[in-house]
Image 1 (cartoon, helix red, strand yellow):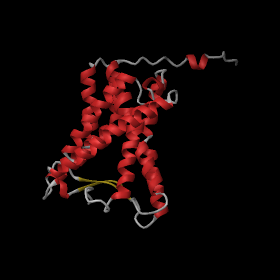
Image 2 (tube, helix red, strand yellow; image 1 turned 60 degrees about the vertical axis):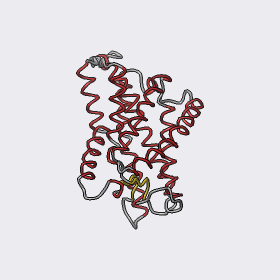
Image 3 (cartoon, helix red, strand yellow; image 1 turned 90 degrees about the vertical axis):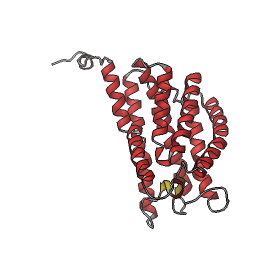
Image 4 (cartoon, one colour; image 1 turned 30 degrees about the horizontal axis):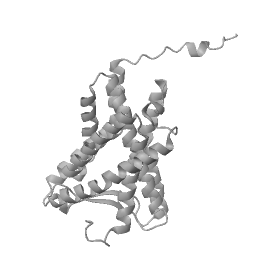
Length: 266
């Protein structure tokens, strides 16, 4: 039996993105990624504030060894963790592609590499010093745990893994919390101000494990990032900025911890 070209494809009905579909899709994406991280951070924060002693006497370690004393197994776990954390980004890319637009609609592509790099570097230079000062002040006032950006063994893959971890954080957060979430909330009829606050509060929520300072500082950064995204229409510069900020925190801590007096260590 001869099948006419296109008949199989035509047998699939075109998906209509109703408000309910968009709402459920958004909730599922968040439940599989940073929304779940926000709940986890809240539980961690409750545990910290109910533990005897002040917050600054407790530590939050970001990049820890997954297999102490077994460097090759540790490396495998580190790479697995980085790759699996990016699965929600792949899901978002798939959903946007099914919508007919892809990641280019949120400005995560290679069409403007140099402007993205330049803008990202400028953002990082401004936020970086401010962020360090805010963290030190919040910890000094007892609002923040001591953040330990890395506790990896001194092996050859330490710095490459820290850089990959920083880039992974940046891609995951900016694609989902800024680009994807703002697009979906806009399609659901949310006002710009409400969507901005939702994005900023979400960003702050999954940093709550660091303490009140981590929540407030990252929420403020979220407001700035949403404003810049609305101005430029691209998450590319935000990914660059976030990557540079985290690389500076992770690698800087590895190089300076225990060698300078102003940097708190666990």
